[in-house]
Length: 638
Image (cartoon, rainbow, N blue to C red):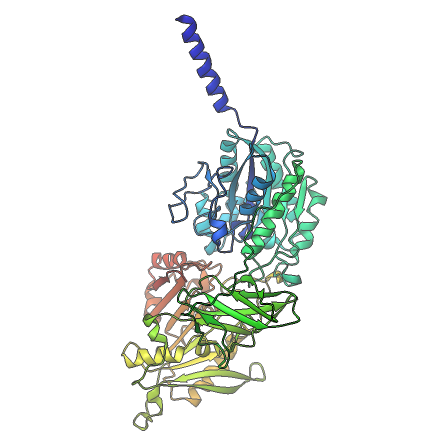
């Protein structure tokens, strides 16, 4: 009996010892960086399904349950599938990195990743000596992301890595960072510091655990941070155990700053191939869907309202899929680029090229076709100014709930006028679009005066956008007819934001500091407003003047109104590009005296979409904490 008990004890001890020893066939990789490691592309169907129990994630934050995966708990291994970084982040290089290693390495080897990334973070945000001061000066939009890691992303990464070392062996460190440090001569040295700290804190041998650094979006030489490419290419000169992962040819989103889903897959596979080679294995690419879909047009498909009459395509079906056709008999390869996603068009053997998209979100979408790397407008679509140039567009209509933006019978309709005015500020002629309500033309109202809304569009659009793409005249006609809006004059101007913001220039994009579009401010105040008040029957006092804007137009609205409260009493933003705003100090502390502000601004409104990368809620919360009256809403799924 004694020997039996001793045998049981020895077996139990052996099992405990085995359980505590890390599995040498469980390869762990640390992933860190900024937005391109965080993931800025929406995952597609092939990204959402887990590749199985050989690819695992140790979450760095808690994840709620979704339709795609059960709840995940920080620090507990689970099967890896997008999103890997945090809830509501997108596809990352780490997704297809893991899939590539699963395909390339023996079946007994498991792959685990720990993923900590923050959009826009400076490399100093991963240096223990700098993180506290960095958090204090971080822009408002980043604070929630930092807080998710208890304001110390490096510490979160190391804590989880130490826990993971009980289960497996760290084999490499994946980094995608540098855009925020474009042109910083100290960047490579700070990357080396982060790497040395990781090796020291985790007792890693640098020769066994290389750093794999992915390069930035190139966009055929037009990437907004293209200046960062050279410094990343030269990183091995400073950090000899680093290896640069090429981004040559990786496709990108329309912002030319982030990769699109296909680009993340390609870059992720390249990370995986580099690691596989270092480990002594021949890389094997995992299966990817081609993205080519046969053009089988359902009987319920209809010609899009933005299609030029006489053409049969583009079309839409009841599932909101788009159907496109191009006659190009000499083309070798044609790509449809819509909403930042690229579809390879299929040759029909008769000189035509066809493509069908995934279901599209309701609303207006810019799109291009591409042959030989050159974007052009589909000859079958109406044109619209967007993406900093003339572009094709397709309207994906709402159902009856969208009647608010459609012209209606039986109600009066206003006019949208095209006007030129002279700017003394710029010594040039400028163009504006002006909406007048239906009653403006009635003789009975010949002496009636009207309030004015100055309405600004988003970056890369122009003064025609609100009336052509946005149907603002129909929206106002319907609202006025229902008594939901007072009759008003609406003025729309280009705002000097037709050209793109040059992120690589190093200039600030923070609220109140950016020079992008600021050239419009004196034009608006000294030329346009006086011209409108002289030309139209306006109520020219501040009590009857408002300003609102979409995206960068929202940025301009904050800059203009909050520095000219003697001229405006109403303001609003829609997905406003509000960067780096500290509510306590912004605009000489305009928000700190809530009583005075609330008396001057009769109504302040902020709206954003649930899918926007800039969330307005943190700023709204900050304003309300100071006592500012601000109405706000989030549009689900947009």
